[in-house]
Image 1 (tube, one colour):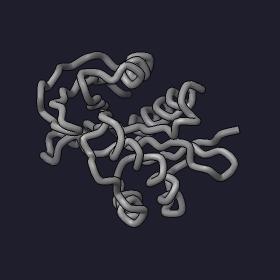
Image 2 (cartoon, helix red, strand yellow):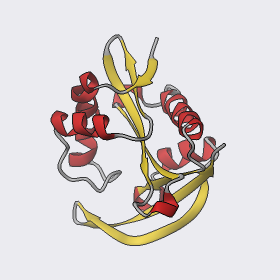
Image 3 (cartoon, helix red, strand yellow):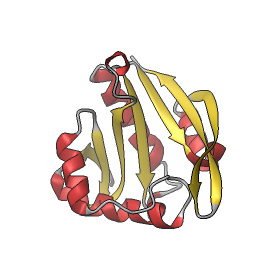
Length: 162
């Protein structure tokens, strides 16, 4: 049985392992160099919003976090959500459980709006996951990223919380 809990520094290696292939081998993130476990530990320590891990038998299978949408004070009630799953966790309902729990905790912590930034005009699986969790399309930014010799769009999706 998988569990969802607040991330701790002990989860950093597992989080790094889940994310690294996305940074190096895919188009679903604009990151090109995977953060180290130490960088993830710092992110966990500094996080002001929920940062969750999905684990099974002690292995991190995914994570979800919220971060400030923008640094200006008027945006303080809006968060950007991030979610990644290890390949063996995909297609088993884990993403929905993890995202639903993240959104609940963000609302409980005072967030009013959640924004997802999905690379390449709506990665189909990510777009479906967010739509199922109540996000709606908010706009497309065209050609704002360049990775693996390709210009990429981002789809913005938004959901009201609370």
